[in-house]
Amino acid sequence: MTKTVTALRADRPGRVAVELDGERWRVLPLEAVVRARLVQGGPLDRPRMRVLAREIRRLAALGTAVGALRRRDCSAAELEKKLHVRGVAPAERKRVLDALGRAGLIDDERVARTRAVSLAERENGDALIRHDLEQRGIAAGVVDAALAELAPEQVRAGAVVARRGSSARTARYLAARGFGEETVEAVVAWEGDERIG
Image 1 (cartoon, rainbow, N blue to C red):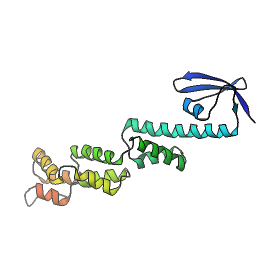
Image 2: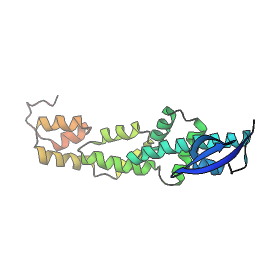
Image 3: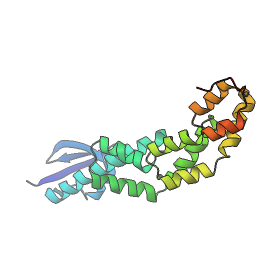
Image 4: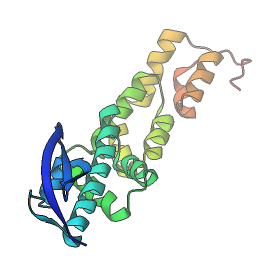
């Protein structure tokens, strides 16, 4: 059944109060109202209602993704997972991710580089950094490129040894932080009787 839009009133920034047949109906996002082409005195029929519903879903999905990006930079896979958890349909997830990618808001290479640098600054080795990036759904080639931009693992491990001293305890620390066995052996010198494990 077609209803008539009897009023459209600004409610709060970006929101419009819609009145149908003289009665308050809903407060909707302005963009959804515009895209559904609702006008005062015009009809709200099934085709417009479908467009309105689709736009509301799209804007909600976009809001979820942008909200996640406000908190921290996320990979495309992380955002896709967040949208999936929120019940966003696969086609809508793809549209939102594509739009954010075109806008430059999603960039797995940037996420990999900044996260790798951050983890390296916190004295983590390549294995731990690789694992962290892979858990974020970042492709292996992008992970490799991010690791290649860091100072070599042996140089980073050497800085830890210079600060903590060369001992079995430091070797255990490095191993626990994801430094490779060869790297640990190359930078830590300890007495033959001391055991790492």
